[in-house]
Structure formats: structure tokens, C-alpha cells
Figure 1 (spheres, rainbow, N blue to C red):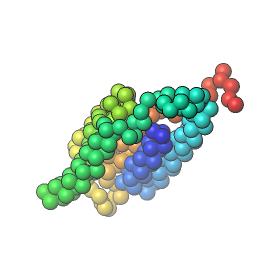
Figure 2: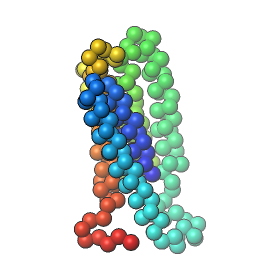
Figure 3: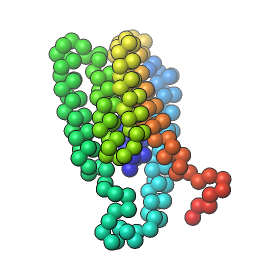
Length: 189
């Protein structure tokens, strides 16, 4: 499920970043985003198939062999609630304060902060690394000019937030994606 979610949001961020580039680089970035997304979707499908081969004995006894569903945990729900509330508040406040060019950077930072709430839900420090990297992308992007709709077709801040966020997402689950493919000594089937 994590790879599937990453594929979706990585594609969204990647395409937004690609749209902030001039014509040819935009096309290249969009194509790369599609290739990476397709690879992640294939990995998610393979992981789903592999998970169906796992023994179901403890599941039939009424217990989940993997513990509680992290997507239903309190930590997960609170992290998502924070994100859902904080993003619109930041958008309104930044626009009212006259900083519409900072909205994308703030959204990236908020998304990054929400990942820290996922650490206890998934019992994985990987989410802290992804969250920290996302916050860093959001903050560092503020150092770049925001020129949405510029004559050159380049919005450096928009490209950095979109492509930077996509890259963080993809690198964050790359070990899972790699694990979906059998190695040279692994028999499939």
C-alpha cells in the first residue's frame, strides 16, 4: 500500500514540478515521472501478489500477523488530520499576507511534517527521514524565485518543490520497490 500511495503522490509532485519547467525539460521530466510511476505501480502489484502467498493461519485465528493496521491507527489519523487542516490554513494565511509564491513551499513543509506522525503508526524511522527531507525541500525552495507564469516558462521554486518532493518520495520507498523484483538467485513462482 505504501508503494502505491508513493506512486500516486510521487507522480503528482513530479508532474507539478515538470509543469514548472520550459517546454523541452518539462517534457523530459514528465516522461521520467511517468516511467518511475509505472515502475512503482508494477512493484506495488508484485508486492500485492507476493503478500497473497503468505500463510493465512494466524489471520484465520482472528489475529493479524503484522499487528494492527497502521492506516487505522490514531497516530496515522492525527497526522493526516494535521495535514488536511494545516494546508488550507497556510494557503489562506500566505495569500492574505501577500506571499502566494510561498504556498507551494509551505505545502511541501506541511506534508513533510505529517510524515513525523507516521513514524509511530508504521513503526519505521524511514518516515522521519522522508519527513525531514520534505521539510528541507520546502524551506530551501524559499531561497529560489517564484515566477509562476513567467515568459521563460520556468518557475524555479515550483520546479524545486515538485521535482524535489517527487524525488524524496521515490527514494524513500526505493528499498521496497527493489525488494519487489527477484534477484538472480531467487526463483519466482
